[in-house]
Image (cartoon, rainbow, N blue to C red; front, side, top):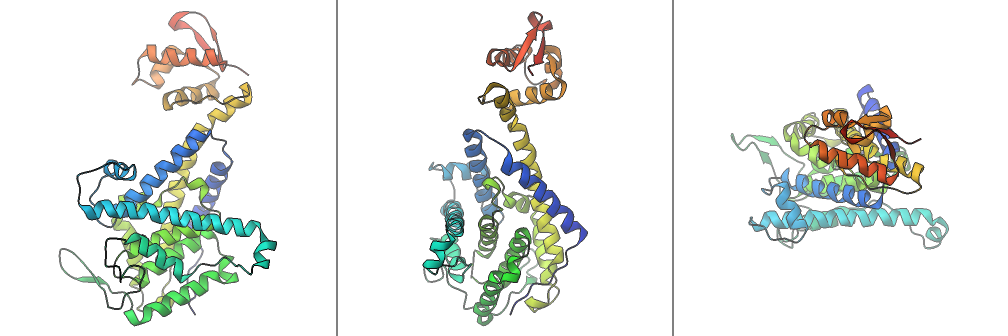
Length: 369
């Protein structure tokens, strides 16, 4: 039976702490619905684009967004299909996570129907089938490989990764699925469980193609299903893709330890995985914290006032300093004219957020208590 080997290092603990702190802020930040929808849409776009770009998809982010919005782009048909497929994957794991949450809330009925939500090989195969729809033959979609595959260095042709023989794949995946459903495994932090899932599926390489996307999607399912979806605001794929060399190095560093999966120490990979998630969520937290200024406005006025990015920067300064002159606003946001900033400040006055003392451009704008 598979049992992952790893050590909870200080680096892992530090990043888990950052993840928890960011999660708390993000989950409790009161955002207006428009911002919620915007964040989720942006995260979905980034997940789909960078998750496929990491595997060689030639579309840029703008082209991928156009494809997701149903627009035509001049591109290779396969690249377009990969983007469409990965969006379907994200929707699929989202639905699985919602089903798990629903059954968890309704335990008496769940017991009566003898339903126990579990991770299954069927889920992994379905994710793969969606990833590779119209990309590989129908017979290979959602089916474990029956041939050996190897990964070679493009420039030299040197083999740098040789996954397990095809005959071992069903048993290795079965062992992994058994482990992740164990009560003892469920006591491990969800971020670490997701990291283990990501590595193990990538290492087994159970399919002829689409293994990376399948592994990342299943890891995302673990996070979503175990209440670490964090409002669907994050996209780890962007960080993996921006420094793909570090991503693959972290994976292959573990795989080079031993030919036997159960003997490998996953600590280096989990340190990397937790660090990436901490970076992403900390950045999301800071953005959410800025936008939650709307909630502070609401507490004063009894209603929320939508603010654009420029107005948020002005409000941040006012929150901290309580007063602001037009000349100070110009130094704060030099890329806009004084007239534009003056209109923003007068907008705050009109909405009852601040009060104005003085006249013309020499006036002082004071935050209302």
